[in-house]
Length: 71
Image 1 (cartoon, one colour):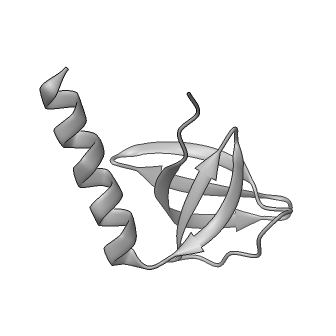
Image 2: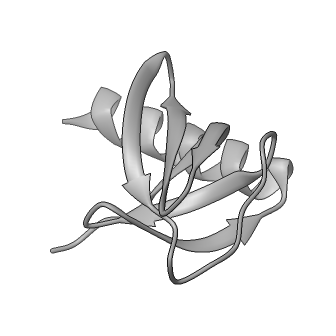
């Protein structure tokens, strides 16, 4: 199973962006979707695949936290 995770864009550096995933900084490619600092983005396999609303990102993060608690 593949999972895409939401993160907040901290910086954009050409073809990559630095994102914050619950305190973890990760670099992802941004060639598929244009992003700007402050955007919430869905990342899969190291690539930003969608810009999303903050509420959507927070709902996904909450579902992932609940899933971890049930494991």
